[in-house]
Length: 272
Image (cartoon, rainbow, N blue to C red; front, side):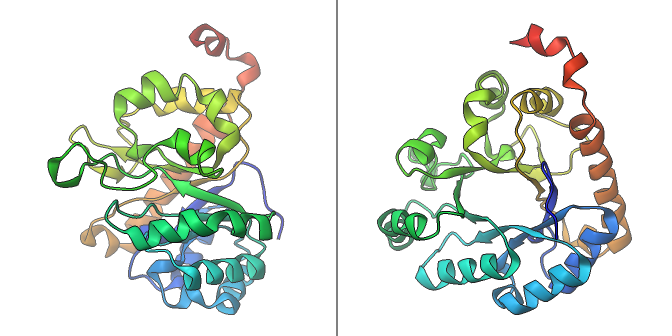
């Protein structure tokens, strides 16, 4: 299967409790380019032969394998098995909580060797939600600093934009996207509300997504983007509504990112 630049992926953790076969089917029928596999949420996602079968059956490449926040050797080795079976080049690691010393020590002590032994894999750490531990001035999650992910841990960034504080995203991050883009392996697209609820659909964007798209195109970002939504049980129960929502998201992405002609957009230069 041929993979494409700027592929739009469906993150399987958008559809919890759906069978993995159904997730692949919905992704295919609604027009996604591939799959972002949250292997830690499905037992059958640990079966690399089954995942490979679904990928071939639906002609849906696996671009990303996502591990849990409680990462250990068994899980990371299995993620590598899935990558090998599906020709996937990206492993995204959910940041452990600040109190989870075991997972943090495993990552910090072993990631360098995994990177050296698997040079074709983009080992990637996510920027976790900007929340505090017990209302103290201590981050709830490890790897909360994007600069540290790149410089201290020598990893790619799995950028979940709904986890970035709104003012920081618009006034600092978007403005300096040229500096960040080479280190981003996958971007999670979703909205957030003004009261901080994250992973909402794209309709009423609290963050300035259109400007972000323009800047990202200008920086020649070519890696995937993934749709991860936090759907309510009533929404998950309506498969037809979900498929309509996914189709609308894909149309939005095509219009405001893929079809954007940056060569004729003089406003981009004015914004710099």
